[in-house]
Image (cartoon, rainbow, N blue to C red; front, side, top):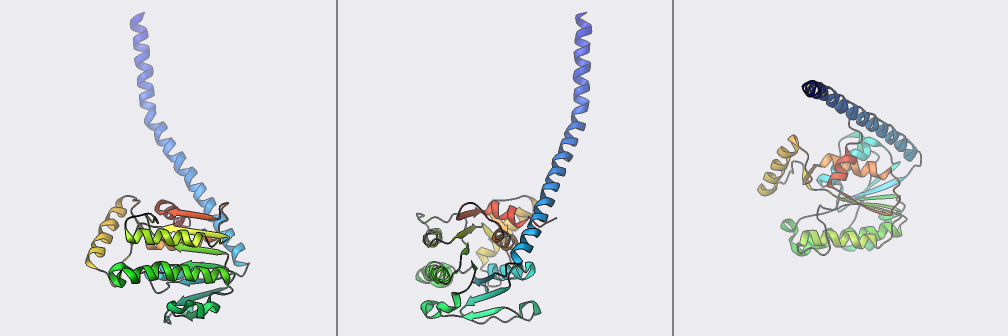
Length: 278
C-alpha cells in the first residue's frame, strides 16, 4: 500500500511537471494579449484626445527650435497637427524648405533684452522650452545665463502673456542642491519656474539623448554610441532616443493630470513616448 501511494504521488508530480510549460506559455500569451489590448486602447484614446484638443484652436511657442531637441519637437508638433498656430522664438530666423513649415510664425528676439520683446510671448496657450547650451561651449557664465536666466525670463513673460501650460526639457539628475554645476542650474530653473504658478507645468528629465550631434565632440560621440548600442539590446534608464522625448512632450500636452506640476523621469518619458507605437 505505501508503495502504491508513493507511485501515485510520483505520477501526479510528473503530470504537473509536464503541464507546467503549457500553462506557462499560455500565461505569457495571455499577458501579452492583455498588454496589446491595453496599448491599443491607449492609442485610440490618444487619437480622441488629439481631435478634441485640435478643435480648441490653441496656439503654442517653442524656444530652442534650432537645437536637436527643438527640431525634433517641432517635427512632432507639425506631424500631430494639434495646434492652430505655432510660433518659434529665437535669436535668429530659421530657414525651412519643407512646405509643412510654411505657416510657422517666427519671432526673432535678443535674449539679453527680453523685456523689449514681451509681445512675442503674448497670446500663447502652451509653451515648450528646449533652450540650452553647455559649459564647454559657452563657459560657466554663459551656460548659467542661457540655461537659467534666458529660460526663466522667457517663462515669466509667457506667464504674463497668458500662457497656462509650460513644458520644460531639463535633465536626468537635475537638483538645485547638487554639487555639479550643470545639474544644479537645471534644478534651480525647474524650481524657479514652478514658483511662477502655471496652471500646468511639466518637467522632463531625460537621460543621455541618443542622436547624432552635428557639432559632436569626441567624448559625447563615444557616449552616445555606447548607450545607443546598449539600448539596442535592452532598455536603460540612462539613455533615450531623442524622438521619444519629443513624442512624450506632445502626448503629455493632451493629458489632464491632477497635480499642477509633474516631473517625468527617463523611464516615464520612454513609456509615454511609445504610446503611439505599434
